[in-house]
Image 1 (cartoon, rainbow, N blue to C red):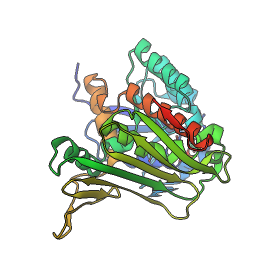
Image 2 (cartoon, rainbow, N blue to C red):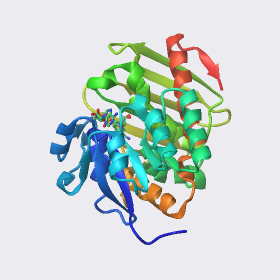
Image 3 (cartoon, rainbow, N blue to C red):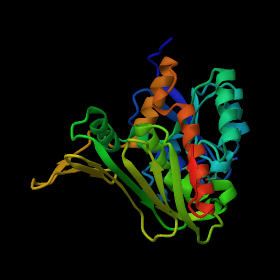
Image 4 (spheres, rainbow, N blue to C red):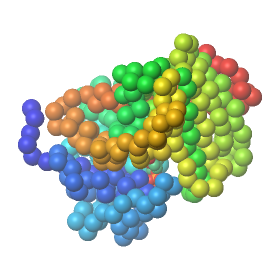
Length: 333
Ligand SMILES: NC(=O)c1ccc[n+]([C@@H]2O[C@H](COP(=O)([O-])OP(=O)(O)OC[C@H]3O[C@@H](n4cnc5c(N)ncnc54)[C@H](O)[C@@H]3O)[C@@H](O)[C@H]2O)c1
C-alpha cells in the first residue's frame, strides 16, 4: 500500500560515494536520509569529499545519526525503509544479502558484485526475502545519455552506425588498487559504458578486447569492440593509466552525430551549425535515488535497472578481461 510519509534511508559506507549519495537526499520528495554508517568515524567530520569525477557535494552530517558498524546501525534504526550501500565493491554482495535477510530493501552501488555467482546470490536473496534490490548503474538515470537512447529508439536521425564511448582517469588510491577488492579499471570505470551500451542495444553477439596490465595487476587500459550482428559498430575505451578525468560518448547516426560527456548533448549535421541540447535534470545520482524510493514506496520492481540485466553486464566485463588477457581473443556470447 502506497504511503504519503517520507521513507527513511541510511547510507552504509560513508566515503566518497557515500558522501555523493548523501548530498542528493536533501531535495528528495519521497525519502529522507536519517543515518550514515562507516567503520572509520573520521568520515563523519567531512562534509564533502573529492572523487575521481570531482566534488561529492555537501551534506550536513550534524543532522544525521552516525554509526560505526552495520550491527549498530540496524539496532539503532530498525524502521529504515532501505539501506543505501556505498561500501568497497568486494563487500556489496555480503552486505546487500545481510540487509535483505534482516528485512531491509537495498540500493547498492556498482559493481553489483565481482563475479556472477555473487550476482546470482543477490538475485536469489531478493526473491527469497521479497526485498527490493537495485544496483545504482547511474548512467541509466542520466538524462543526457537517455536522450541518445531515445534518438536510437525513435530513429530521428536514421540508423545508428557507430557508438563510441570512453571513460578514463588516473590510478585510484586505497582498496581500489587491490584488484581482488575493486575488480580493477573495468569494474570501476568501464562498467558504466558497457552497462549503458547493453541497456540500449542488448547483449552483443561477440566481443574482442585488447588491453594492458600496467600497475594494478589487472587490466588497467583497454579497448573493446562489441559486435552486434546487423547492428552498429560499438567500441569503448577505459583506463586507470591516464592523468586527468575524461569521459564521453558519440553516437554516429546516418543523419547526425550526437555526443555528450554527461552534460550538454551536441548534435552535429553536415553543413549545419552545431546544436546544443540541455538535459532537463542531468543529476543521475539524484534521479536514481528518486526512482528507487518511488519503487520502494509503491513496492514495484526497479525494472529500469533489472538485476538480471546488470548481472549480464558483469558477465560481459569478465569475458572482456578474459579476451584481453588472451591477447584479443574473439569471444562469442
Ligand atoms: N556510481 C559512481 O559513479 C561511482 C563512483 C565512485 C565509486 N563508486 C562505487 O562506490 C563504492 C564505494 O566507493 P568509494 O569511492 O566511495 O570508496 P571509499 O573508500 O571512499 O568509501 C568506502 C567507505 O566504506 C567504509 N567501509 C569499509 N568497510 C565497511 C564496513 N564493513 N562497514 C561500514 N563502512 C565500511 C570505508 O571506511 C570507506 O569510508 C564502490 O563500490 C565504487 O565502485 C561508484
